[in-house]
Image (cartoon, rainbow, N blue to C red; front, side, top):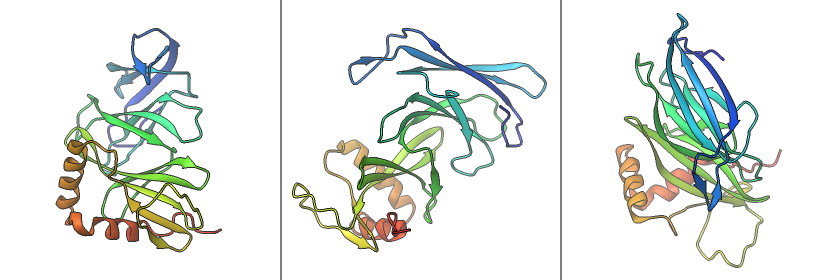
Length: 216
């Protein structure tokens, strides 16, 4: 697999059965995805290794998530669930051929850029609800700026008591409950850097998201 960016690096990878000692939710990660990074001249630059819970297709793919002209390496560390796939994100910036582990994502394998410049990804919570996570790179780190709880407008869940912002067939709310305070603080800082005030963040982000569950 060759990157589509100006670096022109070649990537070769496979998944092997290997007990790395790593665990997720108390279950062993019994596999490892190895990705070899090779220069256009054929010299190996790096071997990226990630523990995985199972073999997932090709094990990895490339995507320029932030549209900076360089492809990120997205390694599938878990798959097969209805909510989405587990991904480890490796990133190289500028002219570097060295990738560093930026962070993790979870959700469907379709990504988009929001009008505020965030990387957005959707994950299922149920057949009629989910979460849209908003990320950005800060240096070599992948940071979650916010998470939007979304649901089909007609969904009536008696356990949910917060208010919603409704757009067409979609209702949306800024998800803060149950998230660690440090995560919220970092997210608020990232929103502020985009000119989004915490007090108006829910309205701004939900309106920008629009009618995610629009009837086709």
